Amino acid sequence: GNSVTQMEGPVTLSEEAFLTINCTYTATGYPSLFWYVQYPGEGLQLLLKATKADDKGSNKGFEATYRKETTSFHLEKGSVQVSDSAVYFCALSETGGSYIPTFGRGTSLIVHP
Amino acid sequence: SAVISQKPSRDICQRGTSLTIQCQVDSQVTMMFWYRQQPGQSLTLIATANQGSEATYESGFVIDKFPISRPNLTFSTLTVSNMSPEDSSIYLCSAYIGGNTIYFGEGSWLTVV
Image (cartoon, rainbow over all chains, first blue to last red; front, side, top):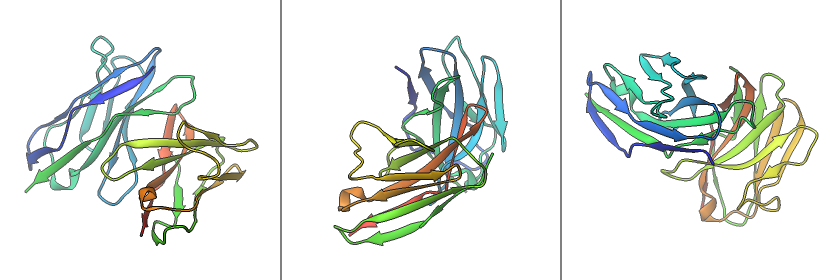
């Protein structure tokens, strides 16, 4: 079956630091990959996605590249802000399947001024 | 993307009572989904609600406890019946809009006392 593994949190950084949140996946087919973000007290928002190998998703300064050879989709940002403090969820869904995503456990990011 | 609205956004409920959560999408969608997110946890799929058919429940969730309606292509409700403190969670509505991607509402934060 499909699965998504994220790095344990919380990740604690100072403002302007470089961020990496690791995500690896197992899938039987050719999935699409996603990062969702949940800000405190809110629902999930789609942050970025990539639908095929070597695609790079980007939004709000965040980037992630679909790496089929390493089955990874790591989230990066060059300079984090306090407002980036949130829980980040990596997810996959099978192309042409039920579209129901498989989620990772989420990684909490705390950014200090 | 689409706008997915849920209400209530928050509620405090007495144990033994039931609460119905409403979810409205601003476009017609075939597939809608209901998730539960317990405190500090990832998302767990409760059921898939397609218009014109009975909801399909995931393992561990039953219709008597979580009845779902899907009367048209833009609306769904989830009822949490006979609530106990263990039902205190965020309940998230989501919908498949296209592009192999699902989008989420803001969530309904339930506390059962």
